[in-house]
Length: 258
Ligand SMILES: Nc1ncnc2c1ncn2[C@@H]1O[C@H](COP(=O)(O)OP(=O)(O)OP(=O)(O)O)[C@@H](O)[C@H]1O
Figure (cartoon, rainbow, N blue to C red):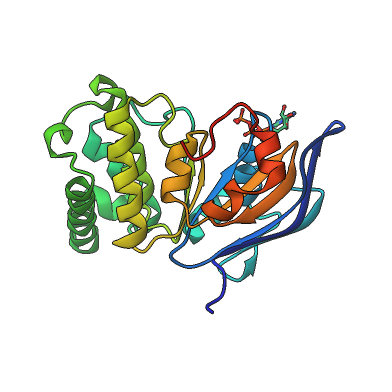
């Protein structure tokens, strides 16, 4: 089997006595859609922050693409190819869809300010190439109708799609999705589910997804890790996880797999 894309080993992270992450280990394999679920405050977002370099755990190891990334700055990890979407939309509202997507390309832009100003040679060719790439994302996420509109004017579900597009514009080698369907209606949720599967299957980008929508997680994920109070309860396929007695206990009252 090929090497994991990302791997956490025995990671511990505390905030002034609160154990946000308590001995978490998992790996994400090429082509895999790995989900992390757990009640509010279970430590899911903290795990994303550990992976992307925002938080430095007190103990444990974090590897991405075979490299030890513990202590590496978030922008360096992003430049290695780890892209992320957030629970709350983080876009430039006054810029158009295309311009927001172009911003996702910035770390692939290899020309200096002077060349860009003079609009010559390398700068011009690269700019055209980036525009072509962004147009492919517009097609892929079916954003044509909105491409030239300021993002702030768009419906919520479309804004979330633009955020997904901006992450894809980075040509990620791993995509972290933090509650990708939070606040969406049924139709938007179904559309997003389709895009997520297409990202895994057509673009071949491995994904780690934190999500509260249990039906979506059970439908989409290849494997799921369940955490509670920072501690991993179990990791397995949706079928395995749903039958785990501790998971049923932790989710008592919620319909797993509904
Ligand atoms: N920067 C911080 N300072 C102090 N405590 C924090 C910080 N970030 C997270 N925590 C605490 O760590 C624990 C885990 O929080 P985290 O946000 O990771 O959970 P979560 O599973 O993502 O929750 P939710 O589902 O509500 O988003 C919580 O008790 C939280 O209060």
